[in-house]
Length: 342
Image (cartoon, rainbow, N blue to C red; front, top):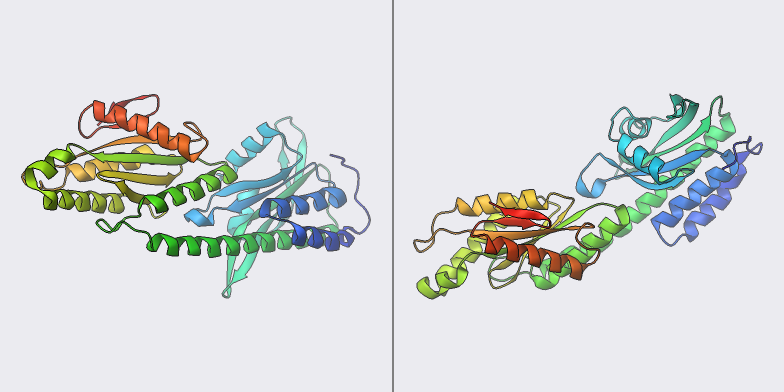
């Protein structure tokens, strides 16, 4: 990426940037168009945009777009922003722009960065959607037109992100209504059709964000004997109590459902599938006996991307680990490559 001085008035590029963002098919294209404009007129050696993970209630930042960095540099930067003092994070948390931040690169060279928050107003309240930053080899002083251009590009990025957020909210609201209309009558949990749809959506989100996703399958141990010896009413009571523990043990971002008979499923964004599965198993083990019999479940857990890159492969991996858990005895949880444990 060239590092010579930009044109005398970079603000002239803003009209083209607005047109490019308006024409973009998705958020990735819009953010890339913004960084492309910055690259052309401000000539930074690196540039990046981070998005705050509002969907999961986190203040963490996720790298959404970048220029001038290889894979190793992107991974390093994505890890570094977990520090609240990092300039990308400080810009988002403090909602303050910094135009002259100096830092030393791993090579020892001096680096001058500009970092701006991405903020929109929603219902009269300012909401931080992320931050944008760019850097140049020192020395480098940004003049007023350059700062105005950066500020305008940050505002444009915030608007693009807000537009995508509103579109996602509308889509997710529609999915929520669909989920409410497709629940399991006995337990009140999502039914198989809804769970599979949520799994597809969460998998698509994980692919887009480069994050993990856990899928856990649960099977009530020796359920057939409960139905046979104590009757269907007792069996239904077991299913309802298992469902209640499942619903009460998961996070707000997780989805639980009943997919048939005595089989339940958990879709959990992130890598916490085994932890949640063990919490479910412990909660069910603590329940009072039904028809004189203690309840327990076995669980098998699979993760994206380690165990599969599509819905079918993940389900197959989770089914295989569930078989391993059931073979180890009641109340076991298994995951790929790890021996089943209580």
